[in-house]
Length: 133
Image (cartoon, rainbow, N blue to C red):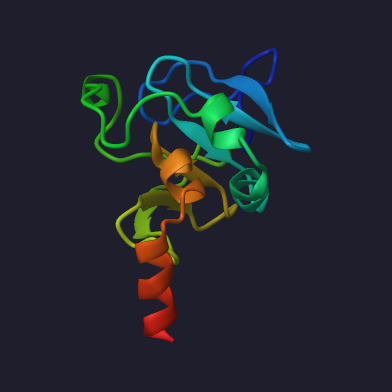
């Protein structure tokens, strides 16, 4: 199922605002101006994380900010593409970052600040990842 908007913009799963299209490297992601959430279709997140300066350009706000989006949405987050429930999972490299994943289409929803956090893989996080091997 696709969006029913005439201009084909997605609705933010967090607050139901229309998301705008933002270029990141050679992909276009959906960004919510109200809450700062970003929707990445399959493989777009990897491109955004690897694109130098992308996080600073489009990711405004702090991770786990205090925006009260629960007033605007249903009890569970739904995929803006196919409306299936989103599942919260830890990022494979940085477990402290919780991402919302669609198991049907493979899309990923990040809160404001999470792209920046994923892009800044710190020395201590690299050491922890190396020691887990």
